[in-house]
Length: 130
Image (cartoon, rainbow, N blue to C red; front, side, top):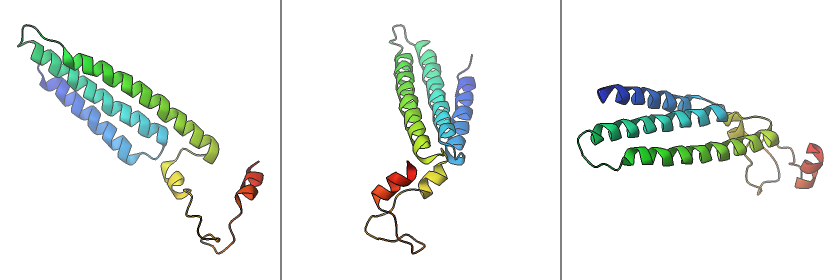
């Protein structure tokens, strides 16, 4: 098999993942797109390792070893990422990235919000959400 086939497939996977990261608004879909990009990198690592091992007698298969490390890092990343997304979803009620950006807390220096109304104290906030 030629090196061009997995390289083209890897480029398509990476492009699809990049589009997903830039265009999606749901945090879980963004994490899935990052995983797709990592899988494209893994495909490239293995393809180039096989291609380079045909020319050398003794090879260490470093591309396959790097792929195993990448898979381990991706598993840790998706575990921590999903935990963060679930915690944010429980607190804020949404996983939409734009809504989370809009709901970010502002400076505590001003006593009023944009509408001119007084902002509630932290104890009042806790009582209102309970």
